[in-house]
Image (cartoon, rainbow, N blue to C red; front, top):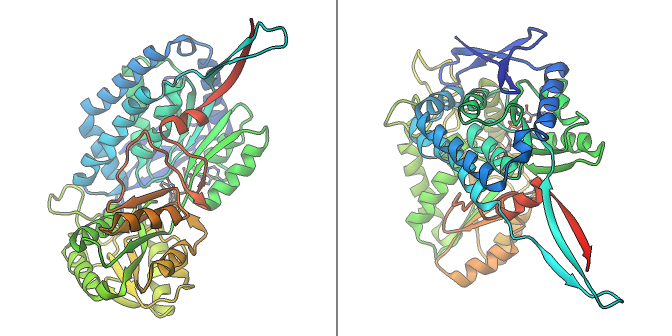
Length: 485
Ligand code: NAD
């Protein structure tokens, strides 16, 4: 049985309180290990270590030296690929085929890409002065300080390093609070940091829950300079309140109820393939996933029939099953939440086109957090199932008749994270994309990401943008130096 300790100041440490919580595998609910729960004391030690490290060798490194170190971290993750893969699949139950193509390689790439993209041209303005000699303004960037990284469980390594990579590239230090559901890869990353010579205190991990636990202790700690968070909107609201004390900056990547819009002039097979991925990959536990699909009426029946055919082909199974492309949800608790929406859909008058229940996985797996991929039709636009984020392998498909109608329907939500538009008419694609109230609009694709581009949501889906120079704005402080000539 494994034991997950905190990683503070370059060392693995236990909780002084002796408090531990269980970490279970959602495939069969077996016990993976026990996780130390940080109290205020461990969080305080971690934050102080991070603060001190800013003044140590890390703070004296050049951008180039830091960049070389981040490349080394990425390489080391790749060298220890199988260990990261095993840890991620055990924690989440996701298919190895997915984690080996997305979670681990992209988790490593975040260090390289941000190391390369964070160097930024210095802003300079020559100005006139009354004496005619002039002055020179130079924009100078410094690290923001100690960054608290609060990350979720759906893509644990990838989403955590999407924040740690740019934070370190800008010269900050970090204290990470990974999700209580998925402590493994963050813990393992501590070893990699030591192997790569990252100075103690630059990267720290504290384990625990949110309220009255590590998450709250970290976000309210007065020495934390900024907080970057990925998770539910209502958690983001709590964290923003904590950040208001001392006017700390926040970056919020929150929930979504993302629309897919399928026009009759699409390439139908591409639209089906893309919508299948966007609704069902990672068992639907992707913030960018499509839970509302709008299909132009003339192709509605055909599209629905093709989706049902594809869902019927999904193969549920253990992570190591090479045939399986569909794992369990992350926990029994989350399965109960998703299942409650499956029940609600029936109460709200949905037609279950396929799925809708808990599958019989056989004696060995029935204790796990399995659920069937599901498609509904026939719900009203104000049904809770159509309006609330479910974060499971399900979508509601509804016909539409005109471009204006579908734009209004797609935007009729408090969320504004992403959308996917399927059409071969490029003028229409641009016209519709421009009107979508989202941070990310994909045309004839989904989850196609260049890390230099902005990432984040509109409305209740987030605050601020990360990625490329947008991350640079969040992870560094700009100082204008004005030199009188
Ligand atoms: P969550 O909000 O429950 O938890 C996220 C993290 O916040 C966890 O580490 C948790 O321990 C911590 N936390 C909870 N309460 C806290 C508090 N009061 N103070 C400090 N920390 C606290 O989210 P989750 O269930 O882990 O993840 C699923 C959610 O994340 C979904 O809503 C999904 O849409 C969203 N998400 C968004 C993005 C994005 O980029 N926009 C990406 C992935 C997931």
